[in-house]
Image (cartoon, rainbow, N blue to C red; front, side, top):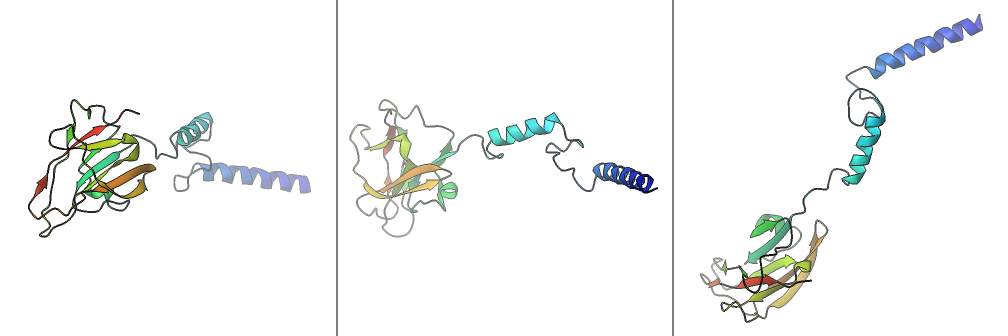
Length: 171
């Protein structure tokens, strides 16, 4: 009699578990890809999550900036002059990138320049040959990318544009 009751309870438990697993309100534990069953596809989904760094991987975004606001890790993504997905290969001595910036703050201020450190950027004067001497200001890291911040040596008057060029040194 006890065996029969235990068998009935076990059968009832299995039936209720199966019904619970089919419930659309509560996800099935281990059903990573949410297809309603736990199988090899879920293991593959876990491996993909691990490979993609938890879904955070993808194209890397690099920022660079030329302007009057001091860039740091809290504002670089909102003040960036431009974003790229790789170190620029066209910023060469033969074809440097224009990095002009205008002071429109209403008073004299510095012009700041910020590039990913591993780009090895050299700022050039209008002749596109002479290197501009900039003062080192700071470094910071944003999205695991180290950045270097430099500025003009002198305050730039209001309504003045500093036109420089940038080239990336080869690593």
